[in-house]
Length: 239
View 1 (tube, rainbow, N blue to C red):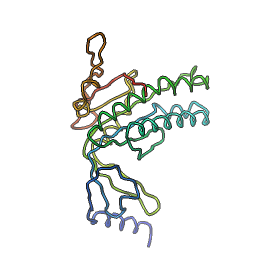
View 2 (view 1 turned 135 degrees about the vertical axis):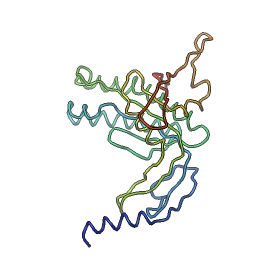
View 3 (view 1 turned 90 degrees about the vertical axis):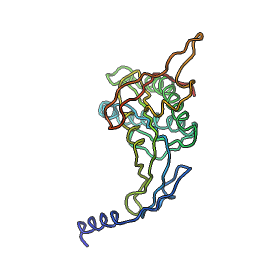
View 4 (view 1 turned 45 degrees about the vertical axis):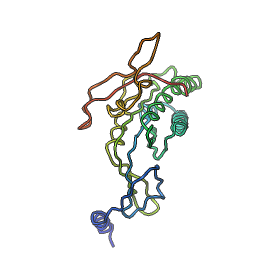
């Protein structure tokens, strides 16, 4: 059979296949979702942590230096996601995706974002710039951003035999990814209104001398239909 015939057959099989959807209370792994029609429904909070302008970094710096930057960022963010109760299910170049479930999923994801910001500003960036003068003296500026959203998500397995992975379908993964792509220092954490509304006072306001200060700034946003308001923060939290 010619390749073109295989492609047409694959699409026909997919379109006519019945879904076998089950509810989930834990983050699935690839092996736990069948390739032929398997799907898991979750109420999930999705976090994306993205290293800013990685293409520019890779073009300007020695590839060995760029690789050390990527590894340092991804290793630290992954460790923080795990420590805050999140599950890591995807890497995309310089970006990592974390999945949070349960009653405290929004709180955990936001604390994770603040931890990442602290680690980046106080550990990752200073150590990289101390090691490589090309980073501390060059035009490229190290930065990162975290985006968070929460929604119902359908997790399916896609690809071909021996070459497949989970695909996360829903608003949260797409919006969180777009939010993590915002570049507006010193704001390095962006969340949707749904996430903000669910937070308790301790993660909305700081207290200084008996005065409350909002830790977030509301901003109009038009990148995704149905999401008109997001909140940004420059706060960090020591892990």
